[in-house]
Image (cartoon, rainbow, N blue to C red):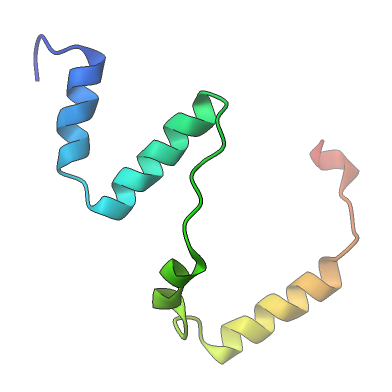
Length: 76
């Protein structure tokens, strides 16, 4: 991809990405430019229903409950 402007190269590479990844790129560009990302309807999340096992959900729940309200000041 020699002699292409940055915008041209981004455009060419973007065209081969799946739609969802194209949306992620758009959200990233909006974030960089200070604009809020576009919101997508909750129905788009339905594809993920049931993809996390009950065991993993329980681990996540316990971890959140144990760590809720705790602040690690050394991280700042």
